[in-house]
Length: 236
View 1: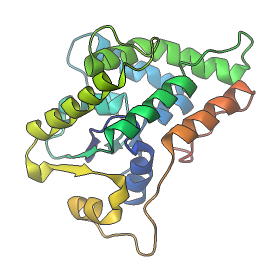
View 2: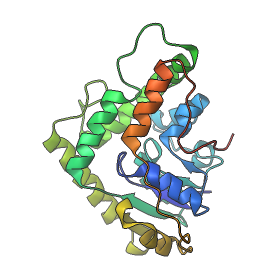
View 3: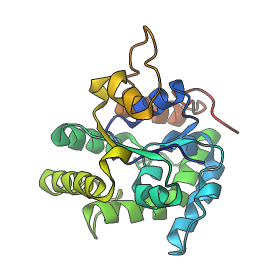
View 4: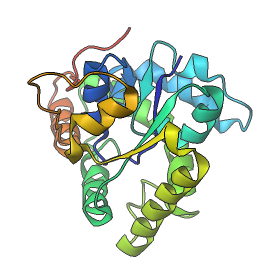
């Protein structure tokens, strides 16, 4: 049963939000790193391609909150499926977001790879290839037909317009008491007030670098290391 639905686009502080929600007891939180560390989770997401209603209890089994694609793309469906859940829309400067998304495309799972990948890397990148139709659906829905991870980010004007369009759609679709528009630089107070939980005493709000985390993870994989989530172990 979801308690918090993440509606923000990738690279809007979603890694920091995952860590924060789990610290506040609203976890485990589903994030793209769950798929990277558990390749069999790809099978959870393939039903979204069918066009039929999705059983979100099955897709998000074991999790109490969501952040990041692919989960955050389906915020509208999850909000309908879990009417008691609150929604957090993470935002940031859209031009900084654009540069971070470009870095994701360059360093993420869609990067050019050598033919002789070590086994752990081959497993992870193989799962990303299986997930590719889901991600292409998300990219085309976000930026417009003709755009994909394979061709890279659209020009900045198109991407920033999509960012603003997404933010407006979330705001217009949900009542104010159910939605928090949140910049992670604001820290604990707005988030804790919205979730009606105590602010962690003496603890700074977690600030994880999404782009740096994915870059280091991919480099470690290609060099023959195992993938390690920056959040530690999640549910089995």
